[in-house]
Image (cartoon, rainbow, N blue to C red; front, side, top):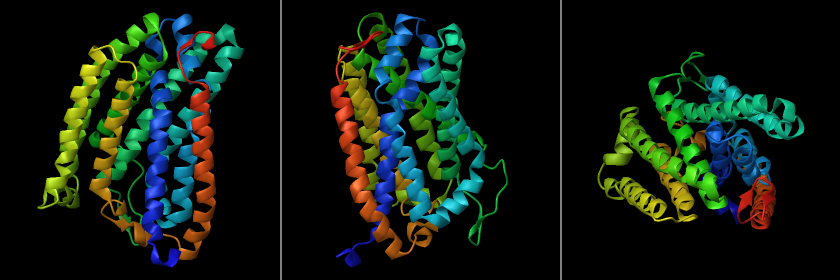
Length: 335
């Protein structure tokens, strides 16, 4: 039966799902780290930490699945992308390590809590910025000769990649703020609601800026967005972004608690769809397609058997964790 299915496309969708799941589930706790200095020491910071304590570590499972899947299923793409983006990827991993250590040590070493708070914020900002720069560098194009990376060490650092990095930092901060609107009460919730308004405006502006710049990076991007008749479909994406933005501001000003977080996730989903429109079916934009980079069919079948067990298991225990730790939280925990 699998012989009649294009497993390369299936695996591209699986990896895309893993990356988006990581954005959804790790984005808001990175956002809380980015916003951490704006919270008052003591009750507010402890409450913000407690809101993500049960779930933050498991969220990064999806990052491992996405990176591991790229290595196993699209080895040529992995071999080209990694040398091009070593610096931001290493920075991202170091940021995640620092924030993970700081998360645990701020409770166990209260005498140096201020230091660990700085490390938690710094790691969160570095990780988010590095993820955005990585995405921007991939979008702007990677120099390839034959089957190898042919660019330099600093090719990833451009105004466009920094713009995308800033957009990811603002977007994650928005997710963190709306998460706290949903999960907390009192002064912290009020502060998070105010942050959400400003961060939403900044995020939408940055989405618009990145979207306006992207079609000029590569001729294929322009064709996929503006050629007829595809423009009749692609035009719906910015329209939906405008609708989601309007609904977001209305729900936030109306006192809603859950809806702003869901609509913020909707903005990320629409941006992710836009990314797919720009690059699919390429895995190295403008250079390597998913079929050119794919592992042999037999390898894809073997890996799909494992993924068919692993992914539902991850989804099940993740859903159970979020269900158990639902509701409001304060400095002492969930209640």
